[in-house]
Image (cartoon, rainbow, N blue to C red; front, side, top):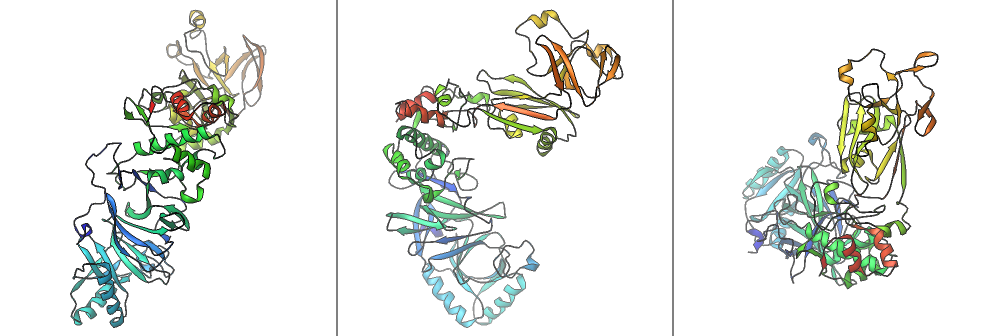
Length: 569
């Protein structure tokens, strides 16, 4: 009996739990497990298509062939409730097919042996029979009933015919595979690491199509969160990079920039390997990890960049780095500790004139929001906000990125730190400023301090006018006003004018400041954000790499510019 019928865990059993240099595959090659979200259309089912016959593997460190299927096209579904067209239904009372079966007791030594017996049973009984694979080995299951009574009725017939078994309900516990005629081919337990592939003669490698899109390597399925059937591509690292690099950088850019991207992407992927990942995969196929689209996105120039840097990765003091990268820096990259929470010595901010010279369309950007739009964003982030008075940047990093941003609202101050500020606002980077014509700073005879005003180290408001004679309709407690500089809208406040005290409403006002007289629209509800760059700003700027390549730098020089104190080997 193969390893398959031993007790198999849903994760890879590797000795070095968190070692970045761990290899998953045979022949010393690294393998990655990528969750394929695209082109998946449904969480409950998917389709597979082989180039020849489809082979079924058990994956426990290395792919171990179990059996071959005659069918070349398959539908893979949750063992759950479906209507007559195999559309998932949450209500079992509306289902045509369901997770209630007869499980015969006998264990078979192979798929073919169980399949042969299942075919005999189908001739004798008016029901589908098929092999079921679990940690115990192969059994025969019968029927896919929407209620347990259907399975019990079939069991009575089988018992009268001399078979031993039981009626079982296995909702979300198995994955079931159908052929093109909607006949069950086999079923397997979610405890197992089952993968599918076929051999493509043209590419001379294992390859399979999922939902009509080709991927190198193997495709497997896991049920997670008791509701989702996810698909996982188990593929060797270099083949994975074929499908990543052209999606992360333009294939038409200079060769050295493509090679720099290949090395960074390889390093990032290997640093993410986690044999004991809870859901059985290391990487997503989207921006959560690296954009990966399989064979359909491969390009000759990027494949060559991968091949010419095969196995090369980036190290700091002989340890693999976390090779983060982004589109456009805006003029300088950022320290990792100023964006997230951990400061890494090789991810420090560097001046990046190359990105500025690259012609990136994201060197500068603008974004405007109505007040109501920002209020909605705050509500979506869990704040019960009804009104917004101002958005103020109160702390910047030495590399020009926002470290602290305060939203003054009817519920008080809401503070966002570091990357969270740009994420809640949906901005391209955290290098931004904000302007709004209706936001001012209010002072009185207690708050203005000439000495402090002359002190260049004192915090100075970054935007807005300062009105000397703004007061509430009812006089505040003077002690509460001492040394305070409040901010907010002036609408509804009172101003002392030559014609007496006047309540401000929807109008324009003139403000006298050190810059002269400015006419401001105090009813402006637009918040205008101006910024530089695209992305978190950490590590390599891809547009900067493009420009460095154009100026004659090699890929290792590019990487050593963006990652401080590293070596490539």
